[in-house]
Image 1 (cartoon, helix red, strand yellow):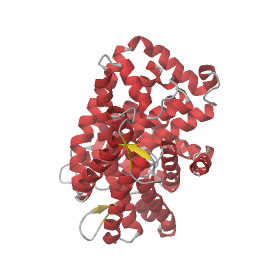
Image 2 (cartoon, rainbow, N blue to C red; image 1 turned 60 degrees about the horizontal axis):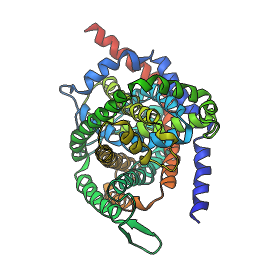
Image 3 (tube, one colour; image 1 turned 120 degrees about the horizontal axis):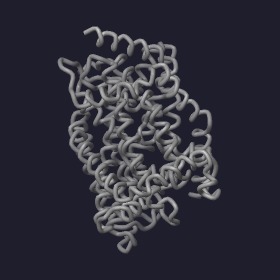
Image 4 (cartoon, one colour; image 1 turned 180 degrees about the vertical axis):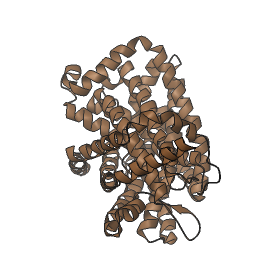
Length: 471
């Protein structure tokens, strides 16, 4: 029964994430990169400066940095640790090359999303800011396109509930905790007859996680932002430090690893002996996991960007752009290099977080238990903040779908919390496949809007920097 369902999901996933969608996302990023004149290179130093510098006398609910942390809380998650490992194991080391290439183009995409989110945002009757693809589709493209905005919002709710927001994150957390505290599943319990046996570590983790998630979500966006501002920078720096130590300890292997990554990106069979597949598989896995991780093109981050305290759409666009840089070009690259340097991707029998754990244990000059504990800690907190961020995204999507009915949103919040509770009991392959499917479906309406509104992005950008240079 489960194998039939899994096979069906894989077929749907392959269709959704086929050549057309990958070309659409990459072409959109390329178009914006060209039209904006490589803005992601030229303006990155300014973007990093504004990332931590709040704008004075600005309108909005939370600071630009808080909005970025809310967006990063949703993007820095299991995709950075588990997703990279899955991509490299399935598509070979070349998947990392395509992941970084997609992220570079994705920086222009994320910039455009953040700009449009602030330009077309609205204020609800109770004073909170609303914005994102559903508003820039409806207001930027016109009322005739409202059906596309509703389609995006529907997929956004599904991604939060069935994809990035719950199952994949909780699954990653429970796998990491189980791998550390009870790797041999020596202490198991049968919860329900049809679920089978699960380690006590998984059951306890799901209960604690559900309680913590519920405690934060009930406080709304300001509580989510305040928690994210503390956890995200601290855990990102901790993970960055350990990954850099691993790379420094294996620095003599880096040239060979980079050669393997680039060679495998274009001729994977020369590296893998044909075991992993074609160049298309490497590209597909790299682009899909990269988008899963940094969400450029998905249209999720602009929902948080719309709440930022700013008067300048361009400024928030630049701050939003740093999210993709930090998430994929820095953190995912460090994870991927660690996996390739240590040969973890070639070890048979390892799946998901086990691959990255093996890389950290082999590559770091610490006892294996220390490396495993640090990785588990990072994964748990990254995934925890992702759960929080995606609840906010999907609630805003539902609010748009329901015409501002907050009663529906409150009911959804409890359904979301229940999905977090049952997440550990979903199978790994099915979880990632479901997440991939909804990711792809969510990207379609957003990318159509970005193509149509690219002229608006270019005009706003030119006008802003012309005004800046005239000061």
